[in-house]
Length: 508
Figure 1 (cartoon, rainbow, N blue to C red):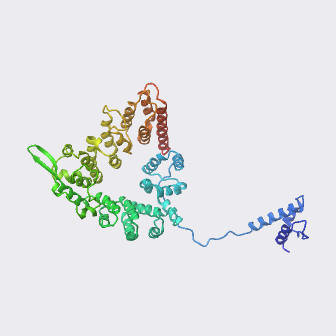
Figure 2 (cartoon, rainbow, N blue to C red):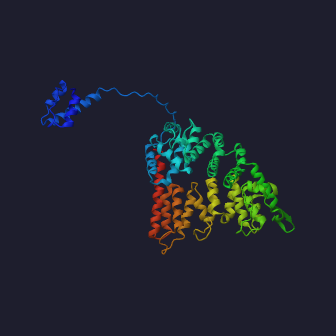
Figure 3 (tube, one colour):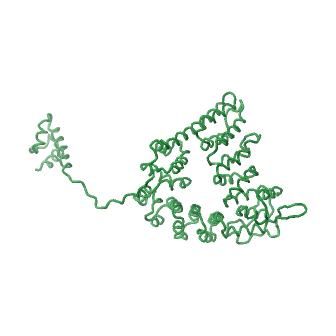
């Protein structure tokens, strides 16, 4: 009986019940067994282990039948320093995760690539957090594309470029939306064509969601597809298409809005002066309003006239420069015309939304300087991130320097929370001065709104000024911060110091 079979028989029956005896092992194994003292069981176990190792040592490795995949295209960017990579790892793990967008922007600005071992985590992030995609897509590079292509139809498939048609047809909805966003960043026309290929088979909610991804890379080439989407049965789809068409300068959608607004609003010049006048006799909405996503029925809770209500719907889509040319007035004169209007608030906000959609930074900044208290929070959240940081600071500073009690109702409070641009030292110092002016011995804890503002400041103020800002807050409070304020100030300093060290790590 061969030696392995003897071992199996002995192990099955037990040495006390089996008459089998071990045959003489090979010479080398025999010498090894001769060195073992103890019962037969110990010799059997040693022999079985030795035979197993002998068999493994003599086995040839398996040979793959599939060819190895092609290697990734090279990424010539230098790798981010190890110190900076450690900060990225911390933030991906949940520590100071609110600083992650700044890390991504800083790495891209320096032309550095993220560590290869962290690419899977960054690819996961791109699927889950749509707001980070504009920062992630230009940063990940060719190795992320290679990695996604090796992963096949998994959650990273949105980053594949080898077979996007299959991914689009087979992947789950979140992956498809991310794929469309990725393609719109790399090749807008290809992304639009991919969406058009399955447009009629998509559900209404999917059509609306996918349309929102077309904002990236939006241009005149997208107008025919979007104009056709205005004939969609779902109102949400028509609204999404109209929002995109409004962002295309000179689109037919914008021309229709301008024609409607012009019919409703006139400039009257007379011996009493120049004023705006609503034309109530033409205040009728036709079927084209509904096609363009505009409401047709007068809102029940409005205090406006029919003409005023209709103008409120179309004015946000008419670029301010249109009125300047039509009436031959200057921007400050246009604002002055809005002041006597009974619906001044709606008129100013309509001009604000129109300047946002038209990308008219000059008029938007004029509105901030002259009419900030009238602008709605939703408008500020959309408008301020697109404005030049330095000019935005200059528009907000005068409001902070006014001698007004600094509370959440202050004209600049909502704008500061909406300002996600990098703040200048002057703006940060002005905010600290305004906050300090509200402190008194009985004010033990900051309100939730004030705490949010300090947290916002910690993310956008120059991080190298952390000590000076904290000292200014303490000095103006004489002599010591109250308990709640001390904690909030400490958290602000920790965040500023973390950002300072993180940014410094890129230069090591």
